[in-house]
Length: 202
Image 1 (cartoon, rainbow, N blue to C red):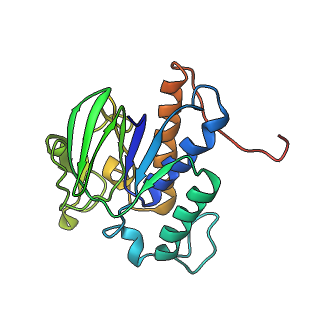
Image 2: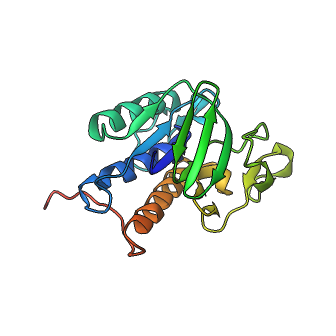
């Protein structure tokens, strides 16, 4: 049983995983089992080129970020399990006992973060009732989002990035994933607001 499984290895999903992984030194997060599906074939990063993203050198390719972020997560927070080459097909159950079914396996988890792109090809069974037209993209693009209130779709299911209704900017997607992570950390901390920062002073 995972405490949280993140669906999507793009900007929002990896940002969420990094923040959750970084909190392993906190008592309330030290025993949590975290996983992320890093299936990235349809990620918008595959064709991206970054010149205007904070903290990222101009000319950086999104395809490079996809690979580098997986290496960063693996080397810095190896306790976060990366599940590669599996596509999520269906979600069953309710909080705190969800089943995620992929094209290869099934997994049990208490919480889910959905962090894939806003393409209208979205087809995860069990989430289709939450699909609505995207509120911040032009109608001609035919993009979708999941209905949510401050990233929360329903109890135990969170959404991050463009699928949460945000615009397609790396910094926005990254912040959205981090915001979801801090919401989950707060839940794990019995409702006491929490986030995790590293510091050269510590």
